[in-house]
Image 1: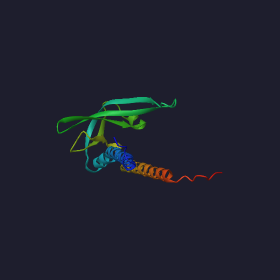
Image 2: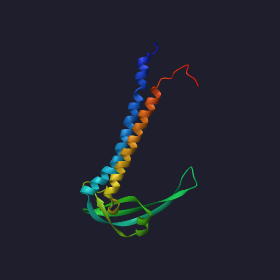
Image 3: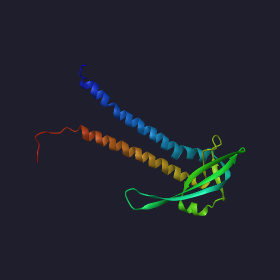
Image 4: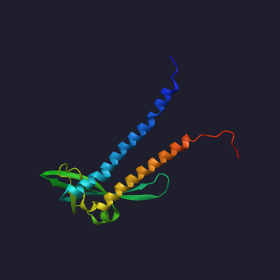
Length: 164
């Protein structure tokens, strides 16, 4: 079996950056869709409805590297659209959690095309949606700059014979 030439090895090695970029784009699409696009759609085309809180959850999660534990809060609510019942669980902050009791009526916004996509009306703030998008864009820009800096460092020639 003949030994592979250097050009074919280099070609095989050059596919991993493309794979990494495609993976990052897929993750970005999923994050943008869940963090931004669904919220923008609910803000622009969503319909308001009344819902009932059926469950409240609070739990403490411990950070694996520290002794610090922090609480997380969530509520589950149910609502009806065209005679069909839907439910959704949503994370909320401590103040909203304290204000919501089991059985309380809350206002939600749902997607008329897919009522499973819904959110508490108070959680859909345009500024919050814009900040989510800005943070995601900044993270992508930082990752891109880090990638370019890494490539520049790898391509710098090492001068032999130069010492202190």
